[in-house]
Image (cartoon, rainbow, N blue to C red; front, side, top):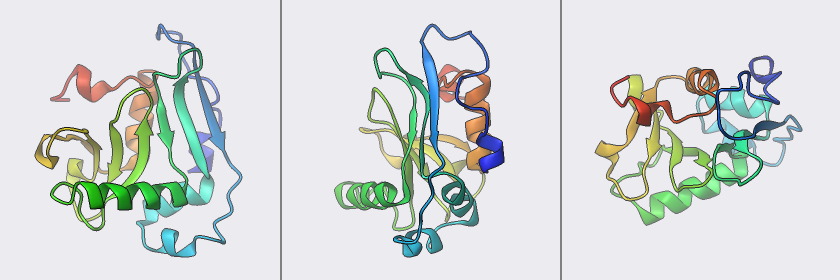
Length: 160
């Protein structure tokens, strides 16, 4: 995963009206949180063994755009809070792995799901059935976001 994220300091094209920047914290130290990593999928393990956290496609002028990939401990805390606050929508194995900057949408990994429901965007006021389904693999979702400079491609064309 680290090799896949190398070079993401700046988005690749100038198609965005925002001044965007990607920051990836490669200072990985999971020694204090082995239970967090061992309880997740191999894909999430790979992500967190490569990076501690990241701010992708962040609008550096206003902070109203981008995706914050949470650290393992922040993910665990946020996931627990969401499960407690919205037990009808969040399952026991759901992991909040990211927060979208400028709104309350969350990037959720659901290992018990299959296909496009495995990675989804949890909307703050909508039930689980209304969440955007993004795909099966975290890296594929991030790669697709990179191809559109961090735009929420699922909102532009929900059927894509």
